[in-house]
Length: 252
Ligand SMILES: N[C@@H](CCC(=O)N[C@@H](CS)C(=O)NCC(=O)O)C(=O)O
Image (cartoon, rainbow, N blue to C red; front, side):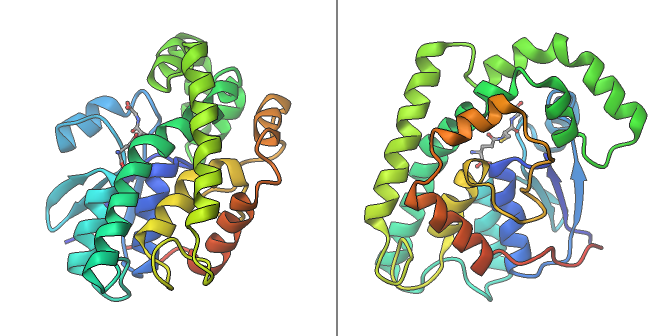
């Protein structure tokens, strides 16, 4: 039975799932949705409205952490969970905390600029779609803008400021959490490193094909990225991608 990832292009939570699939070399299909119009189909498929959703063994699994958990069970080698019980608990707790705080904050930071760049957003999220679909999405963008702003927390300037602060705090905290070996938990790559790197990828300009933004990048987006540029944790993110994020695994 085919393994299918229902996803948004570029999204950092989606890259957690893509990374786990590629890391474990699981052959799979990917179906990309446009943010907004995705809702009815994802709701029908999984009973909730967010991506990523993985269809595995005929069952929809929603949410990056649940997807990684199921992949770890079905395809244990190579492992993303530390072998040692205490380290595993620590890695999973870090994942949960970053999913709840860093992920939404980093997204708000980037969307605070993206939400004013309809053409650029279309080139990102409608990548690979037929020209007519891209044109329709671009044309509908001004109508969807308010919903996108609300959905990504950028309609409230006070929230945007808190999200910049939260992101900065995570960048600093991750500097202190890294072991001499360069990993967040123990001395090898785990779900904690995958989560931190994927959720910060939109700020780090990683080279991987799944997360490399179209060029040229609008000035408003560059201005936001410049607020964090040069932070050592972003160097670490690029290094973790280069060392541990494989190219795409086989497509079915
Ligand atoms: N905790 C979830 C968060 C997923 C999430 O926030 N997905 C966003 C894209 S980054 C989404 O689908 N948003 C569309 C919507 O809420 O309608 C996970 O880890 O997968």
